[in-house]
Length: 274
Image (cartoon, rainbow, N blue to C red):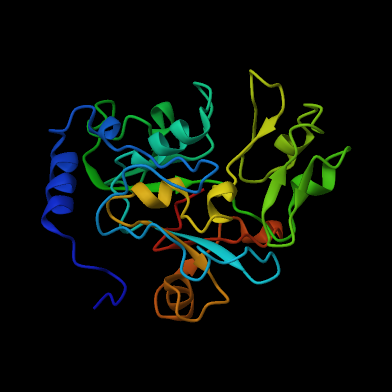
């Protein structure tokens, strides 16, 4: 029995069923992402999805206190794209670029694997592919985002120190110092960085650092209807992420052999994932 899996209420069950059946055309646009302003307030919080990170809101943020990790449960992801929409709205991400995206993996009866990611998963995956010659055996979805490495290659190659790792473990970019050389983009083994066509500086997912410092969850975690994305403090033994990482189940990181020591973990990820 999955200890961490909450009972879905009727509204969430209805939402998921409609997405899976493809009856919610444009349904992703109905999910309004959170946007942290200077007062620390947020907009339209989905029911039964926690807004706050326990132990942070209402307390002065101590950078030495926390050890944050991000967990993606591939077995829960339905490819709805709500996370991508929330991220795009939170940061006004330029079209054709993605701070987070969702890949679709399709396996046919001959064990061939097909991977696609049209528009970064922003529109969801309500329609099946029609170009496959063999019957499909399985389909699953894999969200991608910054891995917040403990030994980040991007930091090592930045010639001006614009990319750095904060004391609380976040790999961030000082856009005022960035010269747009793109060295960090080439060095990242996870291809999560891009050069913003408007600012001409490097950009990537920050796990919504501005929200976390206010005790709020990342926007993508907030809006996920199946709770496939999880975030929390590993130093808190009562946190969900601690219980998941210390409990049963297959937990892994991507490209472990690269030696970057990611803080992004995947639950139920398959060997086909690249």
